[in-house]
Picture 1: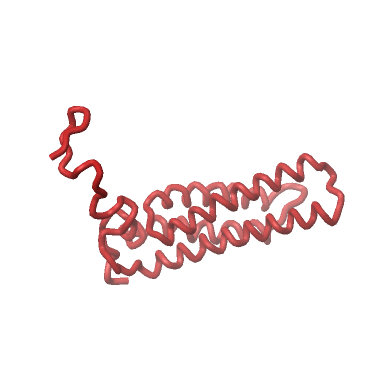
Picture 2: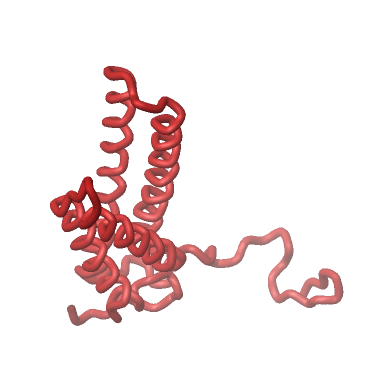
Length: 161
């Protein structure tokens, strides 16, 4: 036993625990198919955000924007969101539990954007549906029992799919 600041620890301070918190406890446990679908959708969303970023940069280089500061601000926002969603997708693939909250938050933002795409002078229902459908699917998957139990809380993924 080691003592640190009046706390007694059962592992030495200089030793690492048997497993870091972010690793699944069950080695080789397969995640349910729903979890793999969830990760696939998150990866697709991240990839599409990177495509949108590339398109925005291309448009900025090839044509004159109505407002350069607005165009640059949108590019910066897009790259920040692309990095964030990419981090969510990568860490979902690793089974990190924190991605459930982050992915849910992103899906709610995406639903808000899709609602805006359905209305107004520049309404684009096709874009609205393209944002709304995957968001609803991801939210359903995030709240399904198989996905919840497949996180890194140390529970094995259920064997029945």
